[in-house]
Length: 427
Image 1 (cartoon, one colour):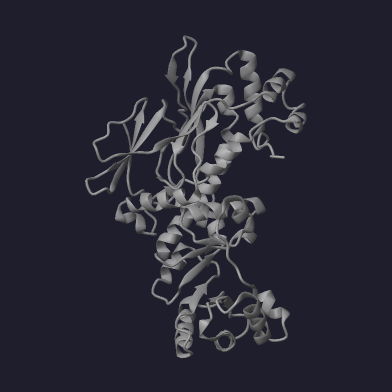
Image 2 (cartoon, helix red, strand yellow):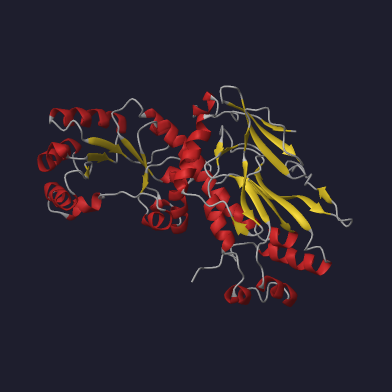
């Protein structure tokens, strides 16, 4: 049975619904938008992720008997009756998965009755804030890694379900594989893995452990060589697997220095094609610092699944337009200090120069901005009349991310703290 997502929300969404139903305003047509007021401090761009997960969650947003029973002392009987037949019948537009974003980018535009749209706030924010934070960090890491693959290894450093979502988001932003098997089963994320230190410690000698692994997994396996003495482990590995040994992994110490030493030793033993994989609390800065080292792949865990210092994106979900008593659609906006919203339905273009390099995020208020010929529309239809339209493969999202990142100005490649690489213009 497909599990309902209806209770992945906040209490006040339902009390607002109850009051709006009683007041007769719940059915008013409304436009909500999900957007960031700013990028996380110091970041030059962000990456949208979680779109596919959000669409799946929207389809499962149903108040079944179990959910309704849990709400009997939360809302009144008329509200429970309304919830029992809840189906989202509105329209959703949004940035496609993998797309870079900037301040005030309208990542989602949700148009429906107030009642239908307001209930989605917490669910959409929780998915987008988490997954986009992971993808934004992953994008910086894969950019720093260049052609060297990054492996997602963070499952044990976060909540078990967050680990699955993180593996998916990292793959969107260019990671090659994950250690997480649920991500493989649910989303088709490629997985990889060989052994941990416990496997070596299980055996009476390191040689016995290596023999067992090579016998089981083949000469192309990756041997973990820093349980005891690295140089001796490398020697044993080549002795046992031969020069066809696939890779060695280093998980501690000065990775740059050790990579040079291990590369020299492998070459001297004739294992010139054996790769070197490094792990151990890597982030984008550590990856960039290893650019000159003979490293072939990076395994990243804790820093990735915690957003490398920014575990959330600060997205908000705000009502920007609604029908008034006269039946006209009017813009509305929050005006409180430091939390200003901009009223009116938004449209978005990525303004580019003749060379295809992004120059600005252009946000039209109430109408589509004028396209000068080089601009790229950013909003795509995701849901129409309640039917999901926007599903796509993760491979499409990965390819989009690479294209979108490549069109950003060169300053996007700088890992140092800075301002967004393009401004946001409201027109």
